[in-house]
Image (cartoon, rainbow, N blue to C red; front, side, top):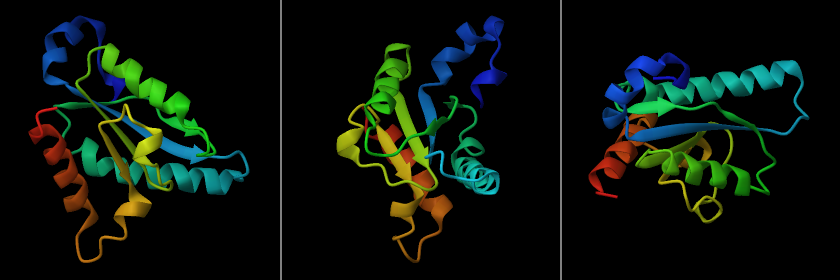
Length: 141
């Protein structure tokens, strides 16, 4: 579910069921032309569908973190920390194009970076992604 789909009157009732916040990370640099930027957003959308559709009742997708040169991820990490302070138990960061080192995002509970996952030959991407989400939820953290 997207953050914009939640209305104020139902949030108090729904909040206990939504324990996971999804933060999309596009990683645009500003060097992209409009066609390249559109393609990056489409790849991210398609990657997010692997989580948003099957886990719609438990996960809320926040606005995407669009720009970032990947050298400095402290702002993204701060957003992860703040989302937890706002009441989410888990924070998942997803990127279709960027590898995001865990050491740079210690406040993210799970990082799903498509470039790193493509290395897992022989397994369908959707199965890998959904398996990682289930592992997070079953870990008890």
